[in-house]
Length: 183
Length: 260
Image 1 (cartoon, rainbow over the protein chains, first blue to last red):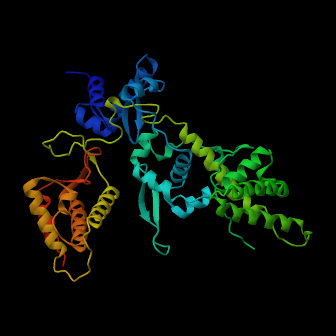
Image 2 (tube, chains in turn cyan, green):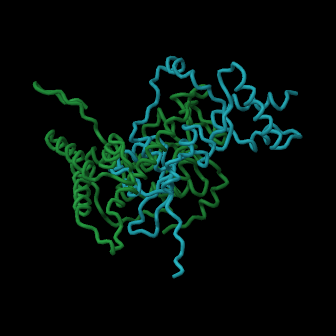
Image 3 (cartoon, chains in turn cyan, red):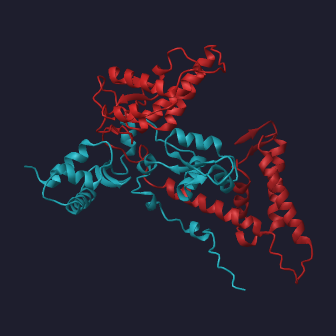
C-alpha cells in the first residue's frame, strides 16, 4: 500500500487541473482528514522548493498543481517551439482594472484608463481571462459587468482573487468613507 | 514610433490616451500630482497634441478634450480667488483620475510581474489551463476536449449566421409554427442516438434564422437541466462547441419542459 504522500504525488502528476485538498482526500480514501492531506501537501511543497527539483507544488485557483519552477522558461519554450505568451501593456492594464475592481462596467474601465476599451475587452474575452459575469440591472440598457475567470487565476498563479498582489498606490485611491453630517 | 523624412528623425512615444500622457509629463517634470503646475504641464501637453496633429495621426479626439480641460483649469487659476468663496482648487478634478490611473499602472506592473503560465512556468504536458473533466463521456476520438462557455457558444452562433449570410441565404421574417418544445424534442432524440454532435450540425438542416434561434435556445435549456454538456476541442472544433449527452436520467426533466 503506497503512502499518502505517494498517492497524492501520483494524483497531482496525472491531473491537468489544480486539485482541491477535499477532492484529493476523497480519492485517497484512507483514515486521514482533509487537514492531514493539506499538511502533507504543504510539506511536499517545502521539499520540492528546497531540493533541486525542476518542478514544485503551487496553490492555484483553489487547488494544488505541479508546475515548473521559474527559470526553466528558455528551455521549455525551445522544446515547445513557442515564443513566451505575451500580453500587451494595454491588455495587462485593462486586466488589472478588471481584476481589482470586479465586477466592473466597460464604461468604468474606460473612465479609469482614459481610452476606449472595447477591442481589448474582446481580446481578453477570447483569451478566456475575462468573462461577462452579470448585468447591472439598475442602469438603463442593463450593461454587462466584467469579471476575471478561473483561467485568469491559473495563468497568474493565484490561489484566489483575494491573493492579488497588494499595491500601495491602490490603497490611496480607495473612495473615502463618507461620514454622515450631523449638523 | 519613429517618423523619418529627409530633414528630421523624430522619435515619438505613443501614449495610450490623455491620462497616460498627462501622467508621463507629471513624472518627467518630477512634480507632485496634488500640486500640478498647470501652466507648465498645459504648455507641454499642447506641444504634444500639436505634434499629433502635424503628423495627421488619428488620435487627437480624446487628447483635445483633455487639452480643453487643462486650458479651462489654467484660466480659472488665473482669476483672482475670492478668499470668502468655498470653491475648491480647480485642479482637483484632475487629481483623482490621475491617481487612479497611476494606481492601476502600478497594479498592472505587479500583475505582469507574477509568474505567468506558458511564459515563465509550465505544466506537465503543457496543455495549458484547459482540462479534461472526469465527467466527460468516453468519446471515440481521443482529441483533448475542454469545457466550453456560453461565450464560445454565442461566438459559434455568430459564425453560423455569417456562413449562411455569405452563402447567399436570405433571412426572411415570417410567422413560424415550430415551437421550442419541438426543437427540444428533436435535439433530445438526435443526441439519444448520436451521443455527441457539433453545435454546427444542428444548423446544417435548412431552416430560417428563427429556427436557428430556437435551436440555440433549446441547446441552452438542455444544458441548463443537465441533459447535455457543452465541450470544445480548442484546436479541432471549427464548427463550434460540441454537445454531449450527459445524463439520460435528465431526460425526464427535459421532457417535462413545456414551451409553447
